[in-house]
Length: 131
Image 1 (cartoon, rainbow, N blue to C red):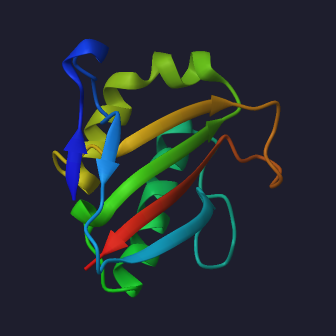
Image 2 (image 1 turned 45 degrees about the vertical axis):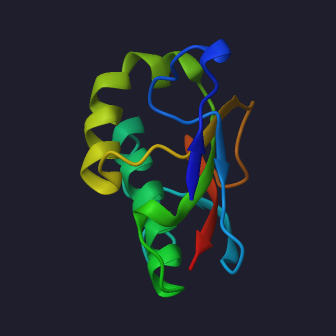
């Protein structure tokens, strides 16, 4: 994959503006993942804990398909409170780097009124290009 960040858009912080995948890659579309465990129980009311578990759940799907962090082309993050997200940005960055390293795919953050699962504060969906 090649990260596309045109200079006229300025330097992105923590994401890439575009990701170009190579021919021959298999595209994996990962359904929205929330902060629950294998028993489908939300582990914590804490936003950072839910973010970590949701991202780990995304990676579990990617790894089950034979992929790694660097194969993620896009993340869409849905949050129920963008102010909570912004307040926890430092801790979220630490969690992200621990799971993803320095790989920053194209990302979008969307604030929504609520998520389908009661108690869920964050949901992450992804697209990966697996060679």
